[in-house]
Every structure is written in C-alpha cells, then in structure tokens.
Image 1 (cartoon, rainbow, N blue to C red):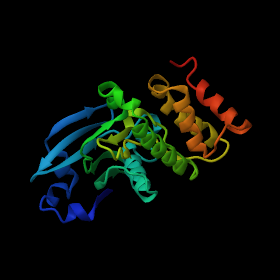
Image 2 (cartoon, one colour):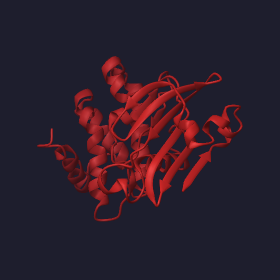
Image 3 (cartoon, one colour):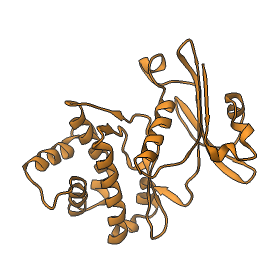
Length: 248
C-alpha cells in the first residue's frame, strides 16, 4: 500500500514532481538538520524554495513498528489537527507512506519552514535576557496557555510538550508555533487528567529555571482561566510540581 498526499501549494510548484513519489523524496539531498533512531530531517532547497523533509524507515518502538500508526504518520495527522484547531504550526506540504502486508516500510513528511524563529530552548540559551521583557513573556505565555487549553479540552494531550518543540518568532509579534508531535493522541477518563499534568509538567521543567514563581503561577492561572487558585487547581498544581520528583 502506498499513500501520497500533496498540498495544493506544492502541487502548483514547478518542483512538484520531486515530491510525487517516495523514491523521489528519499533521493533528495540537503543539509541534515537532525538524525535519530527512527528518522532524519533534511533542509532541502529547490528552485529557491526551502523545505523540511523528514524521512523514516522505522515505524517506532516495540509493537508500533508492526501495528498501528507510525510516528511520522502520527506527526502528520497531529500537525493537520493543530492547523484545524487554529494552533500555529508548520504547513504540511506533502506526506507519503508505504506499507507492505499492513506493516510499515517507510514514510516521508515535507513541511514549510517558518523563518526567523527559535525554539524556546534556544531562546533560553542564546537570548536569556528576552525573558526579562514582561511584554514579550506575556505574549508567549498567553499563547501557550490558550493552545494547551485548546488541546486539552478536546481530550488531546501532546505527550512531548518540551521547550525544544515550541518555536517563537523573532520580533514584537512573538508568535508561537508547535512542532514535532508524534506522541500526541486523544485520551479518555481516567487517563486524561494524568496526561494533562504531564504536558504542563514538561513545560515547567525548564520553566522553573528561567521564570519566577509568580510568572509560572500566572501561566497556570491563564491556562485554567482563573484569577486565583481554588482547591481543585491547587491539587492539580501540586501534581504538576511533583511530577518529575525522583525522575531527574
């Protein structure tokens, strides 16, 4: 089985034929941005246009290699979900998936680069003084709180909501974008409350090193849409603060 999907923007491009087959996508050359056990990411430039191309020939760990969706297929679907929910994320330009006898063989995901952005880890390491700008921090915090609330109210948890997976655009706008979400999925009670705590705890893992207690509390109240803590929000906050105890 072979599935190939192209966005209308890419279909109209003169280099569309380069993405019309899995063999064609896997033959592309470019700058290797990252590499892992299951996939590698290339920055490819064709006819003056840049593309991020993620290639995978492993479905994932354990049974995920043989059953269910591959990590790259989940990432593709989750980026499409984010876009439909109004959460800024890279535009998906192409996706291709190959299976044999129902077993994952390989896949490719092509996205449009978001220029002039840094992930939050890069902001913390390269421009830590930016976190002293109350206006900039408020913009970023408000967008994050709103996006997390939007996901969680749909019973969807990100699963890997770390600072490296959140981009912030340079400039006064400070637009937030969400990337790299292969582990995101829908959950039902009684599992969803734990997943919410995990998402928020992942954000706070570096947040507690870069932000004051007041700033971290302000984000939590923005997420909860509350002016002050109540008994229910206090219980949730305690779980978030204790989530990584003994794991670090």
